[in-house]
Every structure is written in structure tokens, then in C-alpha cells.
Length: 506
Image 1 (cartoon, one colour):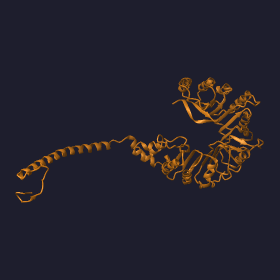
Image 2 (cartoon, helix red, strand yellow):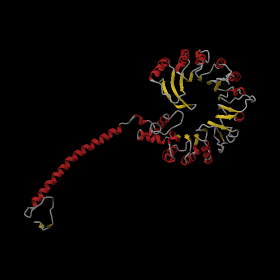
Image 3 (cartoon, one colour):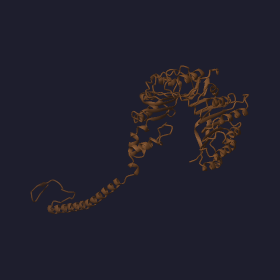
């Protein structure tokens, strides 16, 4: 124990890390500590000068950064929202993917994220591909983490829901549809008939529904029961595809006074007649297949129909007169030659803008090919105002149908031509010969050629074949023609949705 010489305070240990002996001078020790303290304070002052300099530099840099404004960030939010809306698919069906809008827009920066999340129009459409979710657990997670937040961002705006490949509907998905049913504007369902009826049992009122589309995934012919919707007051479009046949009472609860578009794969002749008589606002009517007797009375002229698709049931044209028809899609077979079409066009005197023809060959018919094409020429000569033509034919006689179109004397106002072929590539010669004469006339603006491979295992075209097509199409593109050539995979009697795009003009 050491006593202080000045005050007598008893020291019970060392005041610093230095060990002082009992004979050391306390004042010397205190001087050393003061010198060290002075050194530390001098270092602090020196470092503080550097800190002040760095602080000033930081403030200047921050000021300079704030002065730099990206031009795109100066655009008003309302304008940015409209630009974002233009990034959505043209068909209106939005698939949730981080590589496409709107999710891709929300990942650019915080500014874009704020605008995209607050733009309700980016989130009012949703495509759900149920095939991607292998279990109900995966679907439950997607509903909770993706689908519900997606539609919630849309606020109170009208919604469009597209459900694909849904062979079975998970309970979470059913309740999701029911929860947003009051806001549904367009509902497109690709599911089995059993699942559709199951949904109808719990589906509530649909006050905003304007379009309903039903498609049958297994493509087996089933009859659609009476649609027990609670009289959707705004329904104007009904589309039923994929082997679903409507009963005569299926549309009993659909308010016919408002229906404008009706597309049905298959109905009875009696139902076809009733629809034309009882749906006064009907403008677009597509029925590829009709069941029943052809002995039907001629219907009075219908002034409302503007678009008609009758497929292989072209004989129905014999009982129709449609003066205001603008678009017509039919199938021509040996059993059903285009005589119906020629008489219909002459009787209706309509100003047709688009004609779609599917040539289906029947080897057992007595009608000759020459007779079919002679009648087809007569039909096309009745259409001087035709601006768009779509042709799909087999390869039995490619030179005939393209020989018809080779001269501009037939359909002289033609601006858009779409050709879909099945078979070998040898038909290119008559096609491009016809295209050359049409392009020289100066009216043709758009040309699309699709080649369907009936073999589902067919590979995409080689580079040599693509270059060959390119060499033949390039001269037309240089003339200003918008051209597109693609290979379409074909399987189970239906074209695949995916295509191999061989070339497309910019």
C-alpha cells in the first residue's frame, strides 16, 4: 500500500499499466501520463481535420448525386403507367413471369416498382396454367403467395381470369375464383365438365361478367348441361370449344337480349335456328359443326350478323341471307362443294372483307376437283372488295388454288393473304409464283405462310432450308411486304400453339 505525498491518499494498486516500484516518484508518473494524453489529443485533432474534410466532400458528392436526375424518372407517373400498360400482351392474357410485364417492371428499380404496384391495369388479368402445379399443396401456395396478391393489386377494377389445363380444381383455387367472382369481366376455363359443374355449384352472382369461354381439356364429346348462372346481366360473349355439345336447353338462362358473340363447337340445327331468331343483338356467330336434319326452312334476312363461321356445315348457307356480313369462315369438301357459298354470296350481296377457307379432301366423293375449283373461282369473282383471305388446303392440287389467286383480276383489293399448308415443301413454287404476281400489282401488304408437319416428332427446319426460303422472300420484303414464314408442329389432329418462326420481316 502506497500513500500519496501530497494528500496522503492510500493507493491500493497501479494507476496505469506501468508497474511502479515503491521508490518511484509519483509526480514523474503523472507527467508521463499527461504527455501521452497530449499526444492522443493531438492525434484526435489531426484526424478531426481529415474527418471534417471528408464530411465536406461527402456533402458535395451527395449534392451532386441529387442534382443528377435520370430523364426517365422525370416522366409523370401517369405517363409511366400508360407506357407500362403497353408492355402487356396484345391478346390481354398476362402470365405471371419474372421475365415479362408486370413482374419484370417491378424489378427494375424502386421507382418503377412503386409505379407498377400502384397501376391497377397491370394486375387485372391473370393466366393460371394448372398443369405446372403438380400437387394441391403447390397450388395452395401459389394461390396464397401469387394469385391473391395479384388480383388484390387490381383494386376494384374488372378482372380477366384464364384457367388452362385444369383437369382437377384444388379447393384453394375454387375459393379463389369465388372470392373474385363479383369483379370478373372475362372468365376463360379449360377444364373437365365435372370440374366445371363443381365450380358452378359454389359460384355466386357474376354481375360484371361480359365474356365466358369454356374449353374441354380431354376433347371428348360431352353435353353441356343447362348453364345455371344467375342471369349474368352483362354477358355479351359466350364461347364453348373442345368437343362440348350444347343441348337445346343449355342457353336457356343466358339473356339473349344482350348476347353479341357466340362461338360453339357443336349444336343442333334447331338450336341454331332458335339462336338466330331470338338473339337480336347477335353480331358474331361461329358454329363449325351442326347436328340434325338439313331439311330446314329458309330464314328471313338477318341484318345483324357481321361475322359467321360454319366450318364443314357450309350447307347451312342455303337457308341464310346476311346482307351485312363482313367476315366468313367455311370449310370446302368434296361432299360439301362451294356451291352453297356462291349462291349465298349472290343472294346476300354482302360487302365481305375477310374470307377464310379450309380445303378438306374427301377421296370417296363423286364431285370432281375441277368442279370444286371452278365454283371457287366464281365465288372469289363475287368479292371485289375482299381485303383479307386465309386459305388452308391439302397438297393434292396446290397449283389450282394458287393459280386462282395468281392474277389480280380475282379479289383485286386483296391486302392480306394467309396460307397454311400441310405436306412437302414442293408447293413453294406455285406459292411464290402467285406471290410474285400479287406483289407486282402493288396492293398486297401482308403475307403469312405456315407449314404444318403432321408428324409430331418432326424437327425444325435446317439452316439450308431457311436460307432457301429467305432468298425467295427477300425480294418481296424489299418491296415493302410484311412477310412471315413459320413451321407449325401438328399432333393429335390439332396444331401446337408453339411455332418455329423461320423468318419475319422487320
